[in-house]
Picture (cartoon, rainbow, N blue to C red):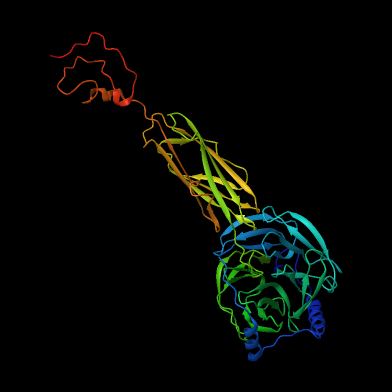
Length: 465
């Protein structure tokens, strides 16, 4: 969701309008579950929560807006894995439970309407759109959807900057309904929901445009309890059971503790990266509580397969394939250290069907994002040196370097090519080549049977008596 104070489109209303919004939303939640701050409620909720298995790590995705509309993929250290342009400002983004579909909702929307989009995570392009109907679209003065996350059944949990109510969206129809819980009076959505490993839903709220974000647990019985505050947060994502909050100042914060008891104290956080970007939202393939992880394979081959002669050109082909259900960063490296002692890289021969390939020293690297089922092919050539002063063996290995990577099979990550050795006739002067020890030196046309050379007739040769 949008960052307050950023240039371009702002996600907040004027101070007077905000006061009106809070006044309206404070009275619009009668009959819905409100925040319970008592210890008894927290303990009761803990009993009804069900622990889940901790997932392996998965990348984090975030969207920025205003003058810098990007879809950015990060690893859990804050390193950027990919970045592509987006078509518009999205209040938040969310992966489907199996990670195959990325959704976004326009921000702030138009009076009486909002739109749910599907986005290609590789290119950032919109692939479909669906009008949102029902109570979420009717939120006044604008829907201002700034929180979006899938839950395990595929429904999308949504929040609005203009309402304390929480909503559900059916992504197949666009119809919204009321979620059976809401933020407490005076608090609206700040930007995201996360299904925790214990079954609770983590919800980030905001009482104003500048203060910290109160963080709530929504229990399976739909009771709501505040567990603390974090720096103002506009998006969140989960990886391997840990929650990362994308703050309004561009920091990616790891929430190092998620207590189960009621509290309004600041939660401990660790800033993994200060990006300085204007985050509007964030997501990962595990936000719904599923254990979706990236999966891709790499394989390599060469032509000819050898043995080769000095001066021959060898073409290498490397293929990376996304074998999972979520867009994956398929990075790999190819070690050419034991190739370039026998051969020379052919300038201009490095090509890639997508992503970015680069040769630095003896290491070839590729980085890129692949859609489920997508592939990329990298090719390059080397020419065997003349003369070959190396070990006459070209061996290289490709290694996946991003989460979920593996070799396509046990033998497809390495290629070995032998270089034929030229016959060295100087060996004929060595003992055992052409005459027996003790024989005279008249046998100038001696046979080299050890090398398998063609027999030559010895004319005028004399036996030594």
